[in-house]
Image (cartoon, rainbow, N blue to C red):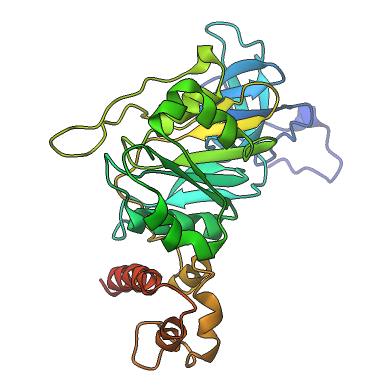
Length: 336
């Protein structure tokens, strides 16, 4: 039997032939220090459209990233063919750290967390004042997700020609959330876009809202004409909108002002991924009232200090009801 010393020549080592003709596996991964920087614009069946400098590049995720998925808004590093020409494919080899993340689940019983968009600065919550009717509970849920994910909320109310905004403004006025009120006429003329854009310049803004509220119509008024998306209408029988946006898409604002991310219309916004103790942070009008709560208060028990806080006129009773409704839903989920 032949034995080898510490300083053997590589030619003396017997190697087992590789039947597949490929290189042996190694745990050493390349650093890809020369990879180009890009931003994910949209994801479609495993293919990611990325902006690299001034061109769009189609890419796929490298196997070495494992289960880690890139989403719209992610800053990524790419190698391979970055020309952006037809039938070319680059490879995403690194996903950079995220400054914020908007997450949701399908409902409160769904343990699977979906990342909607990464690195957005703010969340524009779009709601119609009528046709379809506003859904304050959905707005509250979006606020919870925004505060939890590090996004600043912006409330956009559409169709003010059909109903006044007073009721919603009264409900959210104490939250000091910036808001915009628009009408259908303003949407069609472009006046609404000019007012909304004042809140968007220089930022990445994700738009969210249930179907039929005019979200995509507003986004179309904000972006160049050649990038506009298909819009739908509200069903006269169900009072619900028809889904016309099927995937999230990042679009540049007209000029050099920032980005908007149009997301598919939602009919539910699950919060299964959020710790119930953090839900109160989405209610800054109620949060100061918890200072006198008993230790580990669930905010839905006889000794909760929020009842006295609301009774003294510091917050609207409807806000406390909304908070407790969310907390009750989360508690039922955890108890299943």
